[in-house]
Image 1 (cartoon, rainbow, N blue to C red):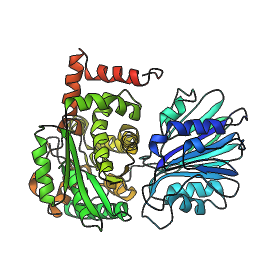
Image 2 (cartoon, one colour):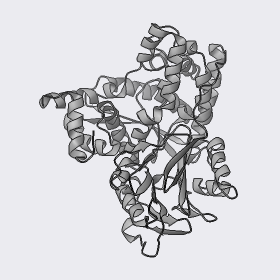
Image 3 (cartoon, helix red, strand yellow):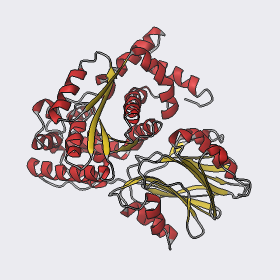
Image 4 (tube, rainbow, N blue to C red):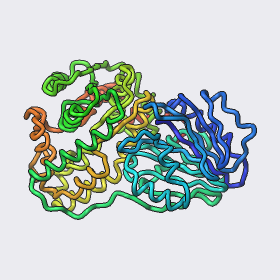
Length: 485
């Protein structure tokens, strides 16, 4: 886990100092080691200040900041045959080899063909960059949970783990790199090639029991793969359906499982969280906060998520706190239930679409929400948690789980337009796991409401005579005065 940066100078000038500059903007994502490379040379140091680049000169360069999550993680970049490589993310199932070494082995030979094969054959959450003379090849997995952004101006093309690294180069039009794509980056700009994107599979007719059994099997395998190399793991826990299923499945794996829950003091949901943790027989780490804690943390959260978006800020604050608690307890991996709502119809708006336009329309919207989850949710959560050195792992967003879930009929997710519970097949899987009804049948409540963060932000905004949206935008302008909203 860490941060990557790559730059290509359009005029052929030395770009290595710019890559170091970008890495300095991203040290919050990794400070265990720092590396800079051209297509045929690498420099790795323990601190970013020690990085010596006087003897390196290239119009193509890349860099990496390391945050070591497991012992096999080692400094990058690494060199291949006339190329340099950075890999950021995680592959599943885990092996004894580091991820970057697995990818390096696969890249020997036909570089472009092997890069395509990585996207089609390797499962996980990752991005990678290959630096060659005069160009770079960039790839991102099909779901896009590991953040990656790109942009260019008159003199430079650049790619990085966060927008702020590109903004420091004077690149203002920064976009999210499309998942499942390879891109060639050279003096002429970016050319994208879709390789392994999320597609809508055909509907597979299946009864509820069979679907719930198969879903449970796939989720168990996904969870096992995400905890197999860990002594302990934490679950971002709300006491709701998604986090409780992950907790119950993780409990069957050979790792120590802890639950972490956060919220404003005196929130009524706290009693439910405690009861759910007790029912699952798992240790709970509960941390509560005050109004001033929300006011204090908002600017930093906005600096991390890099958007003046009130909804995203509402969600990012609890994630920030959760990762902070996990980090202080010495846990570097957090399992989160992201993706479940998009896959199984958890959002209330799906009922409105169902009622207005029918099953085909709601199925299309749910598919698009899965395909675009990287922009709506996943990048935000990664960027907030990475600040604390905590790696997110997402059992619901396993490629096989996603493909199976998208193939299910809508009737196994939303029984009718009046079905306020939704997630029908997932609730049946929870029942089969022995989940008590007060968990399995608990209605969904968005994290910003159950934690009390939305109420707190609304109160802070009212004190200044503003709406939440206006308050967040005002706070963002203070953090990023030179970035357009």
